[in-house]
Image 1 (cartoon, one colour):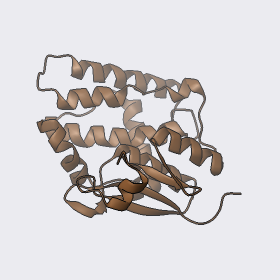
Image 2 (cartoon, rainbow, N blue to C red):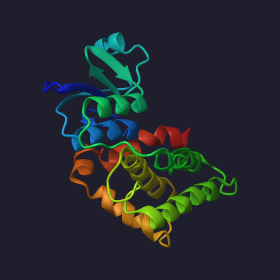
Image 3 (tube, rainbow, N blue to C red):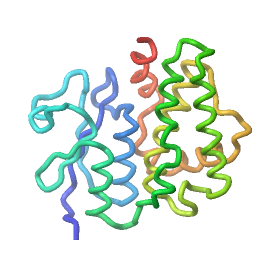
Image 4 (cartoon, one colour):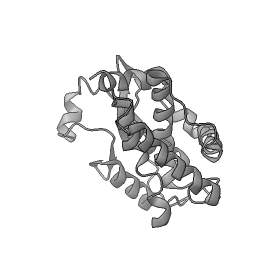
Length: 216
């Protein structure tokens, strides 16, 4: 039986608004998982431009997200997710290996395209190929990545798709093609979760968070 004391979790605060939830998709993933499993948690919003000393003392690398289990601070979102699953097994969220690797290349492909200054460098096409592959998977196996039930793969992918949609529209005027209907249905489904809405950063904070990377 997991203890009922809230777990402490450190996530990114919004750029220029340290009292508001920031734009990290990996932090969003952790909060989503805690919400879906109904795990009580205490949130620490970390200003990543001016990290508090107590945070650096317990987490010298200074990265977010981190979570406290058994008086130890744990970093790396994959490790954190594994520990949450172990300590709070209900509802089970782990997916089989063939589902776990689905859409794993979308986020890096998105980042390359978002940062690209050359429209002919192939980054847009590479992202489109990954999105098409996801659309095909959802057509065959949907509505979620692993079929009828939400899994950890959805909780990882949904925040990344939120960042993709928000930033590519803002910075490039680019949208996911309409013909990827299964992907559009999936996005509509996952973005409509109450837990997703509760744990997401506002679009303006997502844009502010990416702006320095896009303009670099």
